[in-house]
Length: 277
Image 1 (cartoon, rainbow, N blue to C red):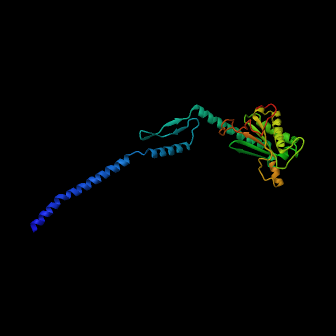
Image 2 (tube, rainbow, N blue to C red; image 1 turned 90 degrees about the vertical axis):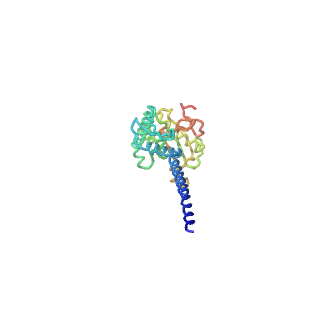
Image 3 (cartoon, rainbow, N blue to C red; image 1 turned 30 degrees about the vertical axis):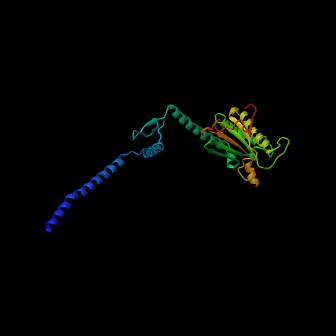
């Protein structure tokens, strides 16, 4: 009995190595699978990393005339940085843009200076934006009620503005606006005619004061673009205004037209003497 048990134990010991061998082979296979997965290149993740690096470099400091942008590219499964230098045309365009921005800011300061008393009284506001300078003048400063002839003080103030605008090359649009109170006279059958003629009066004065006519556009909007409610006298007084838009030409031009200019087929565009479609 003891000898038979001894033989069975010896038989079991001879086959136990197969279990250990199978475990070893399984672990070795798992090891190689993990190593292979780590060595595989995920191109999508590399592209995301590349875009992040480009944005980080572009938001950094820009050297005048020698900007360099790191643009990593995925080539043969690896990330290779590519250095792109701006062309002379791009540098020149950027310099021109900065110079135009500086000139536009100086022009706004000069207009505020020449219209100082009116600005302090709240009759004139001068604002700067992405598309240029907006000068908004209350109509009571320029015209008598229901009229489009400029008063003596208005002529003096606008001539000062014209002297600031004359040396520049920026396009200028003059807009006439009214309140919603109807008007019906022999000269002005409606607010459309009144707003257009008021804008034209300012344009004519600018031309006589040395501003190039080809830079000027007159537009009448009647009561269609209010800045306040017409339900009160104070609101109607704010809506009766003339707006001078000095366009910076720095924004992207709209498709099929000059930057920011009113199209010739715009029904609200008023054609001045000396101007043609």
